[in-house]
Image (cartoon, rainbow, N blue to C red):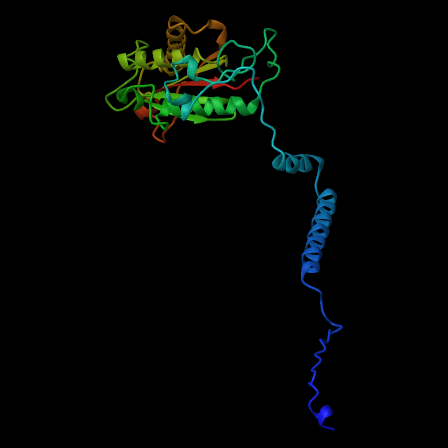
Length: 276
């Protein structure tokens, strides 16, 4: 009895395992990946059914952009590589060589040039507009001459408008003799036009003349001034074949509501887009 009473007491612990254990959270990660993959799959199926071929190509290009590689390239920060438009080396070169501008001309037979990239042409025209207007921080014209310039990109091309200011005409009143500021502007534009192959259109406009004049010379004067600008451009080195048309509009298209305003005396030069 005493021996049994002195026997050691042994405690046995039993670990109970619940049948509802999740065995960790790895399955949640796998399930989330599966749901994400299914969502992406159904999104892809929906896009294939709801978009056109052109839209699908655009989506594909977004996720896998293609970078065009030119045989020769150049340029730098800012418009014209941070330099003046007159520096040929700062303009980007494309193709195998030649004029360092993406803007191209018509072919010899009068048709549009092959391989014209409208995006590159648009960018070149925008760069020229910024340089002419001074928006890029460096203007190609003096402060005095720049006051006579307005530029605008249109469907036809880059419109460069040279106009009279009160007391600062571009031509002698009623004549075709250019003032010094007009000579400066034409010389500057001739340098710009020499960088590209686009055609040029020249249009003359004049303010309305009083009805009491014995002979209205608006038609002759507008046409003669446009022709004088053509002669000045050619004298500055612009090839004659680049000039597509020379037109006089008289006082039919005033820039201001008052038909006799001096602002209506203007010359419009259009750097035509390819195919124009």
